[in-house]
Every structure is written in C-alpha cells, then in structure tokens.
Image (cartoon, rainbow, N blue to C red; front, side, top):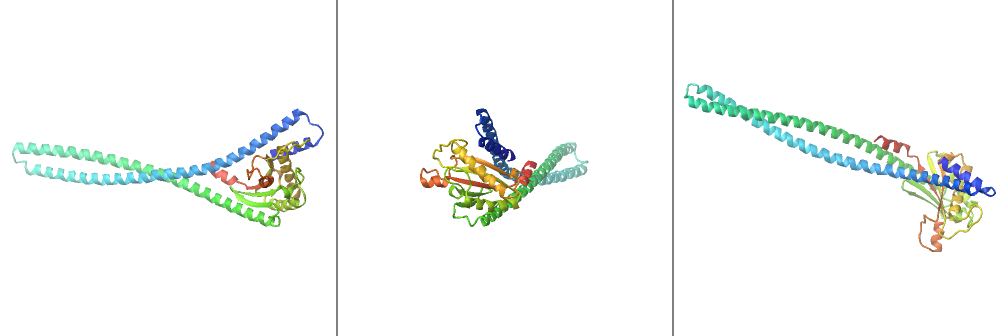
Length: 334
C-alpha cells in the first residue's frame, strides 16, 4: 500500500510541474501498473484463503466418510473374530473328545484305532488352520484399529483447525458489522445527500456520489464532501487495524481533457488521490494503511446508458477492510 501511495504522489508531483518527457511519463505509467498488479495479487490471495477454507471443509467430510467406513470394517472384523474363536473352541472340544475316545479304545481293534488316529490328525489340522486364521484376523484387527485411530486423530486436528478458523471468521464478521455501524453513525448526517454505507464481502463500502465531492469534470473535493471525509477520518484514526482503499469511478461519457488529466482514467485517479490526501490531512493515519485506485468507467453499478445510470456510476468508493493477519496465519499453519 505504501508503494501505491508514494507512487501516486510521485505521479501527481511530476504531472503538476511543467512539461514531462514521454520517457518519464511511460516510466511512471509502468510503476502505476505494477501497483495495480500488487493490489490484484492481494485480492487473489484473499480469494485463495477463502477457497482453502472450503477445501478444509471438503477434507473434513472426506475424512469423516473414511472414519465411518473404518468403523464398519472394524465391527465386521470383530464379528468374524468372535465367530472364529467359537469355531476354535468347538475344534478344541472335538479334539479333546477324540483324544479321550482313543484312550478308551486302545484295547479295541487296530482298524478302529487307525480310523480314530486319522480323525485325530484331521482334527489337529483343522485346529492349526483355525489358529492361523485367528492370528491373521487379530493382526488385521490391530492394523485396522491403528489406522482408525490415526484417521480419528487427523479428523480431530482438522476439526479443531476448522473450528478455530470459523471462530476467527465469526469474529471478523462481527468486527465488520461493528465497523459498519460505527461508520454509519459517524456519517448519518450525510446519508440521503449522495452517501451510502454498506457491508459486502467482509468489507465496509462508503459510496459517495460525484455531487457530494466534486464539481463536474473536476477533482478538487468541495464543501460538504470535506465535512463527510473529516468524520470518516476520525473513525480511521481511532482504529489502526482498518486498511483503506479509495476507488474513483466515472461514467461512460468521453472526457477530453488537456494537461495532466486527459481522459476518464486520469480523472478517476486524480479524484481518488484527492480523497486520500484529505483523509490523511484530517487525522493521524498511517499512510501505509491507505491506497488509491482509479477505475475509470469500467466498473459501473448500473450498465444502462441513461442520465440516471451515469449519475449513479459517477462515484467514489471508500472500502474499509479489517486486518486478516490472524486468519492468514491459521490457513498457513494448516
């Protein structure tokens, strides 16, 4: 923001002097474009943070589905383990019964003893197989339990981070609402005179019509507009956590100027920087918190090509944004 501010100051200072070489003008125009790119990058970073928040929600839902599936698999393995243990107990009982029968039939014929011995060998084989199956099931159950615990720990961590993130978002929403109320109270005497205060996209927008701030095709702030900016500056001076962006907007009628202001782009920039200078002059406000931007005719609020629509589009918007450092820190950590 500081870079934007000092670049804008430099542009005004040089343009305000006598003739400027084409090379210097192009250099300044390049610096201005760099500042606009920095601003767009910051807006993209904020959008990315919001998208990361949505991705966290999707990851939590995916983990919850996997945890539910692991719980179902664990329950199924537990049932199989119980069934195998029952079969193992039956096989052990059959084995003991056969061993007992062999002892009782030791005096019987050799053929009977051979048959019983074969049955005993078969029972022993079945018993060993059941023991092996039981061990495998127990090993699988332990692995499933460990995986379930790991997924549950991960889910708990995500849930904790998400809860903390939601808490910060709720806090920021509350701060924005409080800021909107504070600004509305400070500027209530100007509402209905071309000034409107709104809350959108986690920010507070103070929209001021051209008639409140400027004469037609001029960029020097006039009477009642100065008073409104004084009241707004008091709010900004009292709260150093608010970042400020001033955007100048024009209508779509061609502006044919001369000297330092030649078209709607130049006019919107000059109006935005004039508002910045006045706000800074009215309060002890860190210039790094404030930036100016000219939007020309390309962001209309009413696209109709009528006198009424053009009057709406000729405006200056002061966009107030609470600092989001804490929110960005949580997203970076996750």
